[in-house]
Length: 179
Image (cartoon, rainbow, N blue to C red):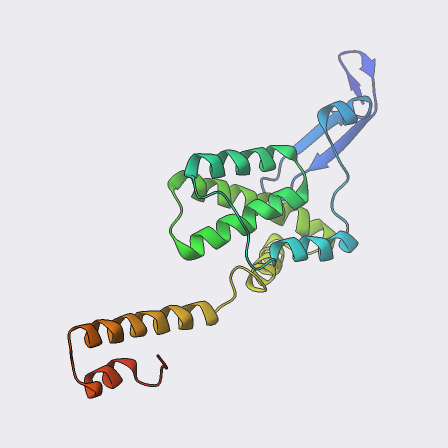
């Protein structure tokens, strides 16, 4: 390409999500931090990051937010996957703050834009792939809900015993659950 009277080779990047075209001088690729896209073989590693069952993140909001920001700025697809996984888990257990929700949505968009070309699928299909990976770990349905229901029933039974209610009343509260 010829820009400002100077001939230079450019790498042309077209984004899937925002339909934007970027032209980066080949000589500046390292300086800018352009890396090759994720290939299909790397998706298996990405899924293992996304499906890790119990992520450990700081409880302190500001520390957690800063940690996630640093991971997103790194440009490393696996660190972006960690942010998506961590925020998905947090969203499952408690609602996200507005800032975390925005971060979660942006991180998901980044990941979807990596997955789609690797699988050669639409962004909708890439999003389904992402959701399926999350459902293998942090978004596993049923067991978590069942445990919470059992815990509430046990708490109600203990309360009934403390109030010196009859055994029948405790059994009514517990149903099939064991003490």
